[in-house]
Structures are given as C-alpha cells and as structure tokens.
Image 1 (cartoon, rainbow, N blue to C red):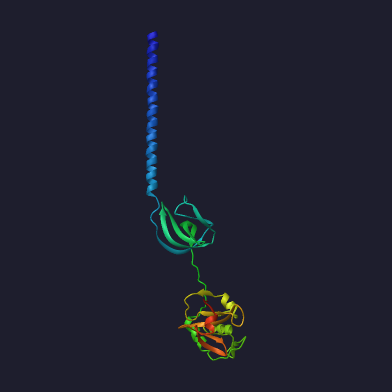
Image 2 (tube, rainbow, N blue to C red):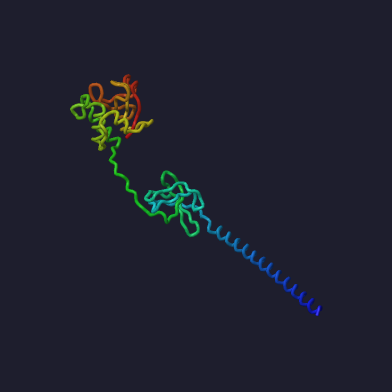
Length: 248
C-alpha cells in the first residue's frame, strides 16, 4: 500500500513538473510572438514614414479651424491655428502613410496641414488703377508755364499739391489734394524713379511744405515761384530744402 501511494505521488510530481515546463514554454513562445509582432510593427512604421517633400502650388481655403504643424504629422507641435475660411498658399507636399500633407503659408507663418482639411480656391486680385511713371512725367511737363496760384487746382493756376494731383489724374490715378496728405499716403524710397514725388520742408511754413514730381536726371517739375517749371535738385534754394523722395 505504501509502495502504491509513493508511486502515485511520484507520478503526480512528474506531471506537475511537466505542466510547469509547458506553461513556461508557452510564455516563452508568447513572448517571442510578441517580440516578433513589435519588430514587425516597427518595420511597418518605418515603411510608412514621411516621404520627401515635393513642390506643390495652389491657393486653398481652410474647411475648418485647423492646426498648422511644424512638420507632416499630428505628433509635431502646432505652429499656429488657422481659422475656417483662412486663405493658405501651398508650397510643398508629403505623403505619410496613405495621408497627404501640404506645407502652406497662412497667418504669416509656414507649416503643414492635412490635405483633407483644405479646399481649392481662387483669390481674385483687386483691380487697382495705377499710373505709369512715363505718363505722369509727360502730363506734368505738359503743364509747364501755367501760373502759380495758391490753392489752385486747374490750368488757370496751380499750387504745388494741386499740380501733382492734376498731373496724376491726367495719367489715370486719383491722389489726395494736399501736400501733407500726399506725403502720408506715399512710402519713402532712396533711389528715385521718374514719377516719384519729391518733398521739401520748411519753405513757407515749418515741416513738410512743398512737393514736386521727379523726372529723372536729378531734376523735378513743380508749381512753385511764378509758374510750373523744371528745377535741378541742386538748385541753391530747393536743394537746401529737400526732405525726401516718396512713391505711391
């Protein structure tokens, strides 16, 4: 009887030992499978990594409020948030897996947006009537000899700003009436071109007080003195009063 019990106990121990080994083997196998899966998954991620950027052009509109990111993918930081309806100009594109991302300029910044968040659009350029420099100069020179008249805006007599306004209008551009307003609506240039304005200061009053039209060769035409005439920028009087060149 004792021998039978001992035999049964020994068999049970062997069975338990074999069961534990199976569990360990199963765990080892499972770990190997998991390791194999992770390796496979990593390899897959590497395969769908972002492709090199290629050139892309076009103007788009944001369909929704959208994040603009530092690179193609949601893991990258947000550069700016573009509101729905914002206009974006595309410069490049990338493929990330099955998704396409566009690099755009929006809100004064550059970044990447998922292409499905954009819709193609066309931005109409405002029609701005401008005057060519040659036509302004031609119109101004045609007025030489007309008498100077303070407050004058017609061919019966001009003051300086009235002369400028009339010449530009003849050339196809409407400009403001006074010297100070003409100064305010123009921007400064260091290399004048024919058709630019020439401003003078401290003539009959302090500050900006006179204006003419630069015609090239260091000369300008204006309504000053007794009549509309051409003067040199090196003129003994006007040269000392020169303030700046400006352009519409």
